[in-house]
Image (tube, rainbow, N blue to C red):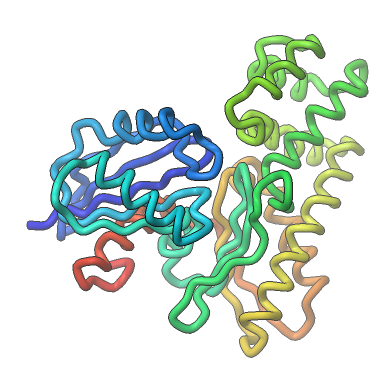
Amino acid sequence: MSVYVGLDCGGSSSRVLALDDSGNILFQGQSGAANLASTPEGRLRRNLISATRGCPTPDFVCGCFAGLISETSRERGLGILQDTFEVEANYRAEPDYTAALYAANDADVCVISGTGSLVCSRYGDSIVKSGGRGYILGDEGSGFFFGKDAVTHFLQNPQIATDYLKKTINEVFGSLEESVIVTGVYKAPTPATILGRLAKCIGHDAIAGEEYALKSLDRNMTELVKVTVNHIQKYHSDKHILNISLSGGVWKASHIYRDYFIEYLEKAVCGKQFNVHRLTKPPLYGAVYLAKELNGHYHGN
């Protein structure tokens, strides 16, 4: 019986899942970040070794990496997988968003909003994406931008910040002192990740009617919907009914993110019907389905 291993290697954490032919779970592991573009090489390799420790010997492996943006980075990802497992097996490396798309079997479009953001879908025999590019050049409507708005609001207006925002900032940074917060952001291995942890504050405070949070929600969700609409118009203009899957931590943080997304999307696009739902299986399962394809299995089976 074959062993299929999937790795979901993101900017915040790395997760590993091994299944057999019958779909039985043989192993689960987790460790730190493994972003090919931003995680230092030594830390990335240590994290994957830690996450896979105790994993049974695989026959088919797929690693879905954040930061896999070129064929050169794909080859690097393949090499890291081979070095991690140190066994003869069938390997493939794919961008991390591919795992989310494969986990959403019936979705026409997958809208990802976690630490980063992007929109992806199948288009013929290819997988296409819009957005992304990281928090400096893109990632519209991502947890990073919501978290940045939350922290900025606190630093500018600590006297009127909500108790929930203060509590969360203190949990993330261990202090409410400006110098500690600023230092914590700039010294973080991945600043986007630490700020993304504050995204839940925008959802909570928006529901409470806080003006700063409502403005953040409006601005950032408008930008994410723009990316989504452009993607739909470019790749799915012929479809009148679209199933859209939402993947990532922002959608889990509060229902208000989904509510605003649907409202703004329906206003931006006429003549289409949208069935919007959160991803029901973790993207990690999508990585395993990709590993199964190496053995001739259709994804999801």
